[in-house]
Length: 230
Image (cartoon, rainbow, N blue to C red; front, side):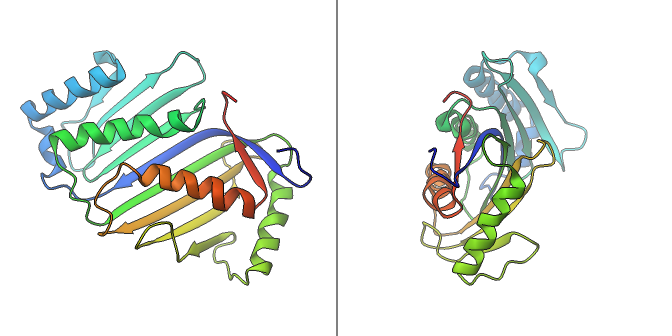
């Protein structure tokens, strides 16, 4: 990965927003018995204590539950916010690609046990913030412009464009490159994937996005995204 022109970044934060419809309204999680079952599963999976969880029973039309889990490394943590029809997670300084995605999958497995996901209108938004290691963001922009010219792309809103042939049967992908607002000279990548109704599972959605990141974005834009543990 030391080839000339390769921009090396270290993944600092990965934020995931999964949005779908639920066969049993997710608002039912606010009901006492379902909430107890949910908390038991979350406590066991993430080894949490009661002080780690914040429950919102006052305004259940917005956010229902929040928790934060610290890992052995003081710089690594996972936090999750459960909403009415969406799951938001954030992993700071994941050690590898598996750790970057697995806690979110584990949380979705738990949600699917207490309120079934119907897989209608699935959206997956991924925000990635990276630290620069070799080439800073301003230099990286040159690679974006070159790719745009070579592929005759018309980008809107700066460095935003759509991929009409995603690695699944339906839907589309929007990609945005920008300068990170939380990391000096850092790179921000926003991936918005719409899966439509044809994808009847969520297990592979994250690995599909990860594959897209490594097999399409990295080689085409001459970047390499490494993890803290590498």
